[in-house]
Amino acid sequence: MRVKYFDHIASNPLLPEVLEAMMPYFKEQYGNPMSMYDLGMNAKGAIDTAREQVAKLINAKPSEIIFTSSGAESNNFALKGMALARQDNGKHLIISKAEHHSVMNTARSLEKQGFVVTYVPVDEYGMVDPETVKKSITKETTVISIIHASSEVGTIEPIKEIAAIAMEHKICFHTDAVATAGNIPVDVKDLGVDALSMSAHQFYGPKGAAAMYLKTGQRILPLIYGGIQEGGRRAGTENVPAIAGMGKAAELADAELPKRMAHVRQLRDRLTEGILKIEKVHATGHPEHRLPGLASFVVEYIEGEGMLLLLLAKGIYAASGSACTSKALKASPVLISMGVPVSMAHGSIVFSLGIGNTQEDIDLCVEEFPQIVNRLRAMSPFAKEGWGAMPAEGDSKEGA
Amino acid sequence: MPLKFVENVKADVTSDIVYMMCPMHLLKLEEHMKELYAGQVLELLTDYDGALEDIPAWCAKTGNDFMGIDEEADYYKIYIKKGGTQ
Image (cartoon, rainbow over all chains, first blue to last red; front, side, top):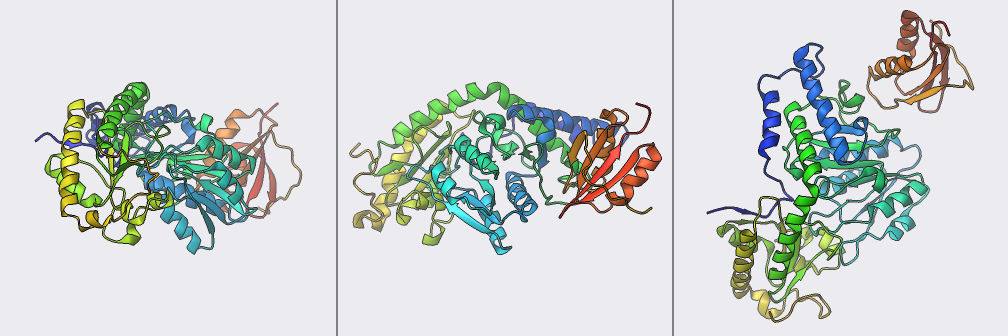
């Protein structure tokens, strides 16, 4: 059975050209980039090239790119590094309720170290209101971090507006662009951010390579101490093959971005249209300001886990926003903040599309999914009780 | 060598390397000094104590003029004048 992979927000397949760019650094070019002889210089050359390629993708200077091991590391580094470097000026941070765990849990760990964190809410579309951010600013605020686009509901946040507010108050602004960089245009100068996280495997590069953009002149306390790799900001021998792969993937993404976006957008719209024909299914996130390849829904009366298992049996790989669906406390914070009832947040389902998906894949999913929903609802005791029913003014397409 | 303290030095170039790991203070110093003309002054901002020994020694070795340091609350400002004929 051909795999219908609709979980590109979790990870992407590696492009053959990317693997090819990585291979020499797995094999003959094994030198340490810090070494002075040719093997080392060649490895260093690969990193320099990748730095230029990644910088170009987001319109940064190569010297503003710091390679890390993952999006999570970049997010930890940005928050801890910038907050600790500025703690003499204040110990207040602002993040949103739509953040990824790697921002959310880093903020929580800083709370334990005496920082105060304001978690700004999102509206029913998962959108942060820049005015709310502005009102949350105190004299103690040193760092604001707002996700560029949510991987659960796909909403693209008004980063440019929030960054301008941060700049006006001389506060460092970071955005977690892991879901966006390489998938939609991301221009650090245009956005006006001080720091930005991105990850290679989100744009058909390898796992184990990621980056943080840090604007020239911004101070940051390192997370990892040791040698002078990455300009003395992130020690440790570089993951040369993965970094070389990230560079190649960035170059390809930069060149193919409009084509890739058009492809997934068309498939996403077809999928959304098909799925919304099912009764008591609601699209989540913003209808327009959203990731082109992400379709997200909540399905009333049933749970994400059940849907995922039955989809899997049909060769369809998807995700649910609520990771652990059995406990009310584990319901997706993003959906809860958007005002989705806890019981309904359990019925979250997310399809994230990629360049390898075809119209046939989508049509098969649109054909199979209603049957899966019906089958689960027939088993669900909640369906009869009206468990998790959405208020009447919801955006459901009734009576398909 | 006793430390020299200076105040209100006018620098031609400032480089902020606070929180950057050793030996970035020497690498950045070398990089910036290459770009200066003789007589121009570099201001290096660093929180690294080791720089207080290393930079005067580097200056003595390379023929540049270690002018002195100015202490801020959490970092040092180190002034180096490029040696040679103007």
